[in-house]
Length: 211
Image (cartoon, rainbow, N blue to C red; front, side, top):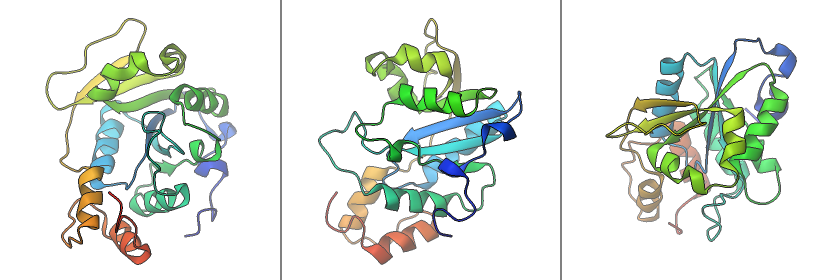
C-alpha cells in the first residue's frame, strides 16, 4: 500500500471521530528498524491499559542521538506500515518526521492533544527512558498531556510526583542495534524481524554497510 493510500493526515482519525473515553497509546522512537519487540510491547500496553489504538511515531532526528543519522524517514515509515499491516489497532503516525529539527516528545504530546482533545493519552517507554526523563526537554510539559506506561525487565519503575505512572513488567530480546549489525555482517537468520520488513530491507539493501 502506498504511504498515502486510504490514510487520513498523519495516518489516523480526525478529532471528530474520537470519543470522550478513547484511549490512545503514543509509542515514539527511531524504529531503525522496527522489530517484533516493538510490536510485542505495543500489544502488552494495549491489553494492559485497554488502549483503543497505539500510534507508532518515528522521530525525524532523536535529540538523544544527534551525532548519528538514522535511515531516511520514508523507509522507516514504510517498514512500520509493513510491520503493523495486520494490526487494526496500530496507526503509523508521521507527525515527527514532518517537523524540522530534533523530535521533542513534549511537542509531539501537545500536538497530539490538540488533534485529539477528548482522548486519554498514554506515552509508552522503558525504564531507562523513565529514569532519564528528568533530563529530557521540558518533561513537565509532556507530563501535562500524557500518562506514562513504563516497561521494566526487573523492578518496576518508581513513581514520580506529578507524573501519572502505569508500571508494567514486560521484556523482549529484540535489539535494533543487533539487527543492524547482523545485516551489516550478511547474516541470514533474523528471527526478530517481520518477514515483510526483512524482505523490504534486503530489497533496498538497507543496513548493508553501516551499523
